[in-house]
Image (cartoon, rainbow, N blue to C red; front, side, top):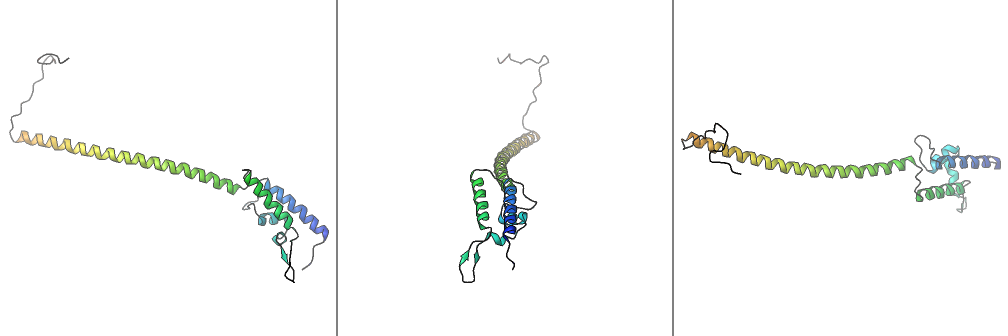
Length: 165
């Protein structure tokens, strides 16, 4: 594998910094997230430069752009802690969580209203059944020949024995 020249490394670092600023300003490419993969893609470099390397003797050395990756992650963390969500997906998740809470409350209110209406319906049906039973009892009483007299309405529409008030 060919080593990068200092000039190529400087160009890559400038491209990474430009991509970092673009991402942190919220200008993400379609399907991109605020992560190292998107940073590397925008900068046109491989992600391997962001991670530590192992020498042949087993010792670890930093990646060529590891310090930039750490700076990027630190800045993202600071923005999130400050409440400035720069990832549209995170903003969408927060919006959907808030909307979910509103919908849960609306559902609970509807269920309570439905329970009240169900109770009212039961009461109305039982009252109608009682009234129907009473009407049927009175009809049966008339049919059986009970002594029931019809009251004649007064011609002048006044009470027969005086006013009640």
